[in-house]
Image (cartoon, rainbow, N blue to C red):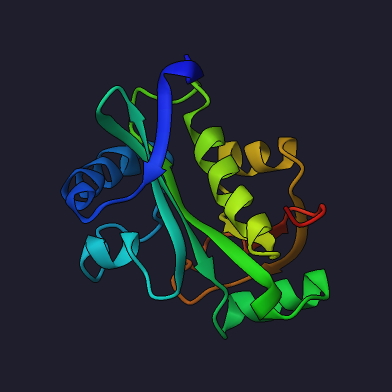
Amino acid sequence: MPSLVTVRPRRPTDLPVLRELLAAQQAGSGYPVRWPLPFPVEEFLVRPGELGGWVALVGTRVVGHVALLEVRPGWEADGWAAGTGRPPERLAAVAVLFVAPGHGGRGIGTRLLDTAVARARHLGRLPVLDVVQEHSIAADLYRRRGWTVVGEARPPWLPPDRRPVLLMALDGPPG
């Protein structure tokens, strides 16, 4: 029932609900990999260099989240730049995408992803993201939506028994 879903910019008053939703969905999704987080959940949800943050609602109930971030120097920037041939300032990272338990399969994640991608395109940036390979449902969703793997990386937070994360990009003309 995607027609009942709306997406709007995230508000500071959404953070308590988003903190609870992130915790509730973590056991089923494995996202984020480190749980509990070694820092306040609010710092995971709202990050420096945000180009936007949005929530999905069913009626008035918040049921999902996504953010779009500037690509900052580090392992991701190096991997995406090498894989896309574009400098970090021409990229925008889709991040912190999750949907509340019981709301999967309704197109909510797709609506959130489309919102972040549209903002990246509006800014003239190439959308990029990273995904843990063991999160095959997420990786498969991105592939079905046209994202391609441009590299792999082993971030410091990834347990040694996990395969490297996939670095992905969504080619296409800027919006």
